[in-house]
Amino acid sequence: MQRRSDAALARNPGIDALRGLSILLVVLHHLGLRMPLKASLLGDVVPARVLAALNWNGYEAVFVFFVISGFLIARHSIARWGSLARIDVGAFYARRAARILPCLVLVVLVLSLLHLAGAADYVIAREGQSLPRAIVAAFGLHLNWYEGRTGYLPGGWDVLWSLSIEEVFYLGFPLACLAVRSERLLFVLLAAFALTLPVSRAVLEGNAIWQEKAYLPGMAAIASGVLAALVSARWSTRAPWLGPRLVMLGAAGLASVLFVEGWWWSWLGNGTMLVLTVSVACILVGLDGREGVRGARGFDWLRSFGRLSYEIYLGHMFVVFAIVALYRASGANADWSFVWYVPGVALCWLLGAAVARVYSLPCERWIGRRFARARARSARRVFAPERAAPSGLQ
Image (tube, rainbow, N blue to C red; front, side, top):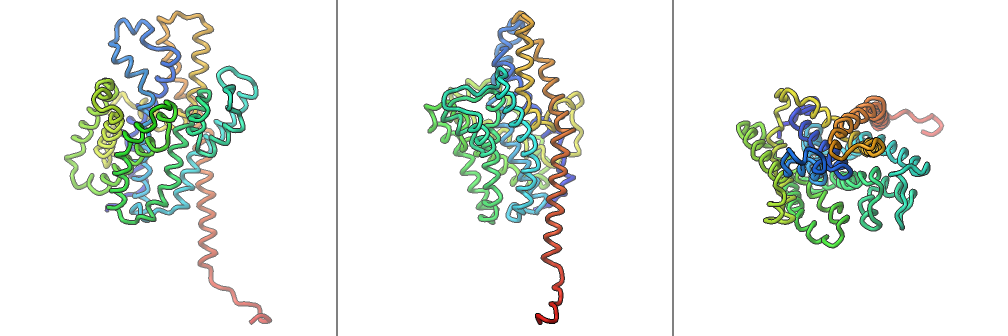
């Protein structure tokens, strides 16, 4: 298996754009729940199918992000350590903590303060829920389970459900790789897991929240991304002609789910989500190894959304609530509600960019340096020459 440097995998314009599309659809979904595009003047001139695709694919977009996450983390792990069987568990966990914890701590702190201040849209008031329990659920990576048991939390808390799924997967992922060792066996196990997605959703019918946010469906999507990374690491450089074809095939599958999802559901039911994850996996394999290809002009803004996806995802509900409050306070007619989407999307990006620049990226670098120094000190102690014992103890 060919090993690449981290620098070679640092940025891929196509993957950044795909990730940007997923986070943009999440933002549009949460705006659409409160200001649906079909109720505006756009409903008279834009096909209903297009407006529905823009407003009602937030859940599907999260699954797109799950697949991308699995692909990137597995692909970068292969680049750093040569294969998944040689993952450095400590370094893997340190990288995840450096990326995840700073923003999570900040968001939970702000949400807690807004709850205590009694701010509208942020107070946890549902029976059976409380602020301390929500904090434990967020940091304990079971906020999805907590919502399944007690109901939806306010929107700013609710977005943390996907983080619970992702990080539980990544807690076990390096250990599973070291335990299995064989790449072929790992591939078979991951493939079997990825294929359980329709079944794991079907058996959860009856609890809409838990069916939407349970661990197994989301983790199956992440497994699809890891599978794509294994395939790409072995074959992408051997069959470069296949890349563009896989991108076109995957893009067609993804577009069909986003725009004619009803048809897929009438035919495949929960299998529709498997069509989605396989389509995204095909796109990722096709794009991998094409980091040097210049992205299409005019889409730099979308790629920047991809680069800031984590910060935007965790913080976008603050903007959504503010924009909706301003829209309602202005007394604006619903016909023009679509106009408010422009500042809403722009402010989501600005907030994400500001948080990344002044807080999350500096924290990530600081944690990385601390971990590197700690590992270096540990290595020096292990390999330091043994000192001669005092003469009285010889």
